[in-house]
Image (cartoon, rainbow, N blue to C red; front, top):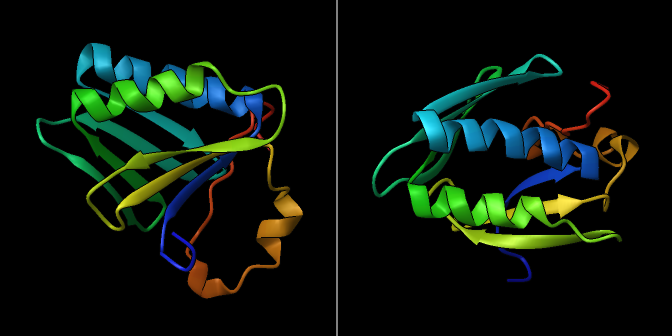
Length: 126
């Protein structure tokens, strides 16, 4: 996978709980919405979907139930140390990386602007 494009969701352990709650609502009700740092995350459950789309200030997570449950399982048991999990998706790349406590906000501030708009989930709202 070295050199391949991925979608990465970087979060601390508390942020993983926030994303888990929003995705769990989507699994139960078909959709949910979370706003963080001015970015709206919309989670929608759709048969056969495994797509993440970024559109001006909004990230749409279109997932089938199996992909959503896989992500929920990964988020439910973050390690007690930094690490990550890989999830197969369809677009915009074939891999979603769920990263726990591996990156600081300062790291993202130094990325080139062509890396997209990162959204770092933290429970304290920062």
